[in-house]
Length: 268
Image 1 (cartoon, rainbow, N blue to C red):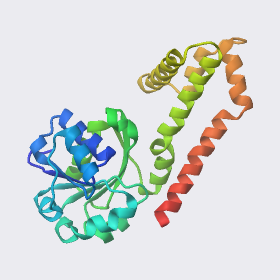
Image 2 (tube, rainbow, N blue to C red):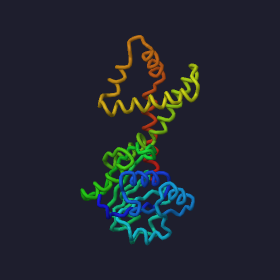
Image 3 (cartoon, rainbow, N blue to C red):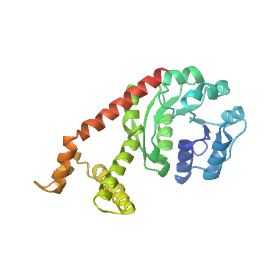
Image 4 (spheres, rainbow, N blue to C red):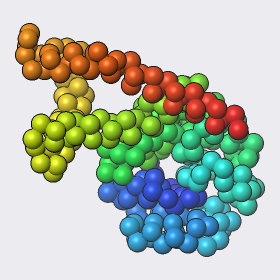
């Protein structure tokens, strides 16, 4: 990405703050980033955590920007873009709005250079995963710029727009499922006699380590699971309980349910 590209966040909430902080860690210039938000508390928090200036004039901010990152709540997108529509048409627009489709964004913004993204909350610590799709005819240069920005807070993958609801159900909502699993592991440890703090540390690090093992070895999870499981051993006994209670099927159903809800929200 060119150092001369100026980035404006419309919306200064948690994800915008995480992205901005990640960009600066990756060497993006603070002076080339700005933000606008009608919420004084969100603006103050963004400025406090990033040191980046908050604009009070959205028209002037959009006019000065090369890349606009749309990070408002979906129900506020029409209002957010109405004031900037005439100025945003020739910009690269990156949207992190859940369920808001590219055609909708085109109609609201007049822009045709659009990247639609579904990030997730581990982006706050630089360990997120952002799946994206883009408008037809987008240049390789624009795609590279978007990947560079998203890569500042974690991994990046490209999907079809028709797959974005499934992405929402899996990686967008997925951290919540994992948090529940970590809590359940810790609860089991406490029930077995561990202190709460030790059980939570063991549970969280176990999940982190297992995830890293999948990513770094490239092995299928079932292969790694079998490597841990001795016939008649402790792991086999624990897995039999998960299987009896349809653990994998339940998690899969959760992803499907969240996907369907994302589709519903996209139609509203």
